[in-house]
Image (cartoon, rainbow, N blue to C red; front, side, top):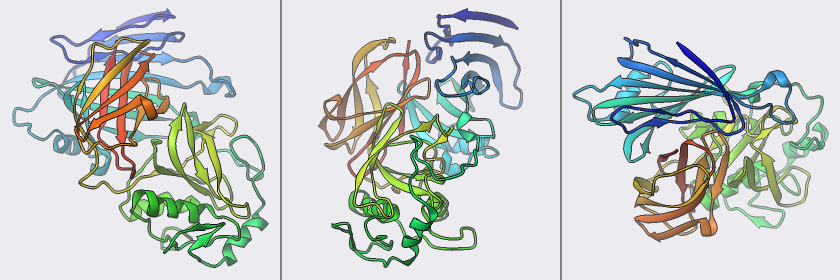
Length: 406
């Protein structure tokens, strides 16, 4: 085993005969690079390569909670009879991931699948790529300070401001279910208005109006004591709605801690590591802008700690089947062509960087030139695998596309 420590540099591993290069090191970080030759008989792996990145302390976090990311690559023997990569992955990884969690993807125009697992300390992202003569399994393990639970003495928002007392929330318990609230109309809405606004009323209206797939009116069952906001993700899973820990445009964010009853709000798009949308709150008048950090460093937890609810996929969801781009280098600004089907105007492209930062491309950054092609303009600042997902005006989401930046 060889261990090197390098500062302000990046290290690159390239697969022989190659389609996959594994780069995941950001400038300005301390890097411990470990390379080991291991025979993984149970996985049929030929060798494993691992990078461990120690990032500088995040502002506002305790020093003993420094986030880190460990990148690994396994080269696997490809079954001769493999004709369905997703079915293969569902069978191979059934002990750690459900079939619903394993999504089709595209990695530098090679067929791939991806999924995420969690434990008490970290999240691990998996990317399985079919290179024709072998499979590459690439993992990124992120230490997750957001999983630390803190008992709060009172309800606070992401900036430390008191939202409201439990007594104010009693209004919600006695408010009637009506089709209008604070001057807005929402026919069929099963949630109460709470006099001047209610987060569940507004989030349900968004699913009906934008998704054109209204969520059910959640209520008490054997597992959840009510249909309050903090239980929405659990109710949605029970009723086969897609729920993910990953943030995304045109989703419903679910928080268990923004009030005693929790909080839900529509996310219109992602700012740089921020959730941008709008919301209602019980006892507060009307609709107001919502702008929360994805990870709240003050409270040391994720704003949407229960995850994000997405519309059920339809046959008209965007699909990406190929990409066209020059060779991508860190720090460059590029126009990249996505080819596929069901592209439409007012499309947003959600982006995840190699260091697990999130942002949306929109407006002039996304140019739809037809139902089968769109162009994005993006500055790719770090080496490694960048992820892209197209989101249409109804919240329908494409497969993930991975592009490698040198």
